[in-house]
Length: 297
Image (cartoon, rainbow, N blue to C red; front, side):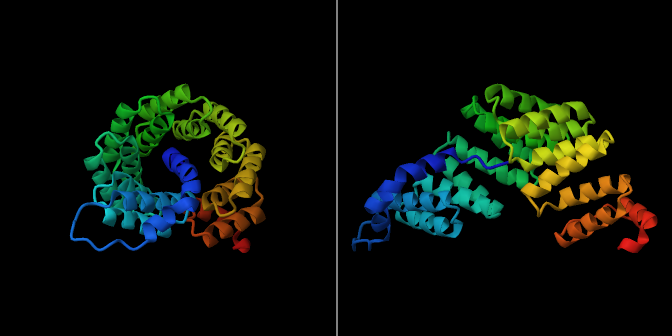
């Protein structure tokens, strides 16, 4: 699931002109000597705005550096903690992101973005109950946000609760019928519960909405493969790999389809690519392939 960053995008756009006009100077200029420990809110805002621009440009180290400056200038500046939390989340620093989100919530208890970001961090750490709790709180604060329902649905699916997941995806689609990721995620859950026709329909809809969504092609390929529609499966896996040639799972699963079609040379090519990309090969499938075509390894 993709990160939700509407606040970052809006703030970055609104700050672009301000950055040129003086945000950077306001942050990096020397602080005047003073005996007062009063927070420098103007400097904190300027530094946070620069951090937001770097965040929008995916320059995460620089973003964190400026958020740090903002917090140093004003330890109670909530936007800086949340901005740093998102930068840390996007660089895989989940525990640090959780800490910053928690501080944001202490300062601003109804910050739905902080709950959302903390939920994502918990989910990526496989702390599903904590993630669901935070997503639910975010939904309480923003009941019409489709992306949050979609996020909670992913956690329910990963936790092994497909009915709850599908219910959340349904709500996400009701709120935003153009949210391609919700159709794709629902399709993934349908594949897991063997509702292959429904999965194919959802993937097709997701592709109509976003033709660059590789997961939709991959999932539709998996559904076609389960229905032994191997030509269609290969076509979808090809497109998924075209969109992301580093997708080890797509190479692995296309190898299985090549095996079922007795195209062992292509199966081995995909197996070897999967290995090169760091993917793991299913032991039973590998044994079957070796038995059918031992000379290709």
